[in-house]
Length: 116
Image 1 (tube, helix red, strand yellow):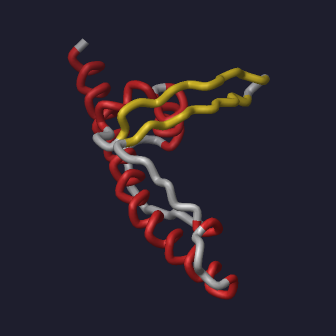
Image 2 (cartoon, rainbow, N blue to C red; image 1 turned 90 degrees about the vertical axis):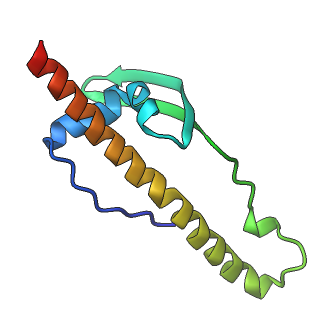
């Protein structure tokens, strides 16, 4: 499954990336479909940061097309494709919301910095 969105955030790429990487917990209030994010592990290996985060959203997805009973094997790939298409349409708004949240967060940080 390929997920793709095109979003413009009016901050430098390095600031946006660092915000996603280092300020993820601070972004949760900007993402209404995310209940919480649990850091499972995070460590730095020279210049590389390895992070595993478990995201908890507003609902659970429990579809495994390969386990659908009563579907002929010939149709299972088509069913899987339909399910993937459906899921990508559900995930895309969350990606857009997260990017908008990063923009709002950075706007707010910029205002705080200017006022300080």
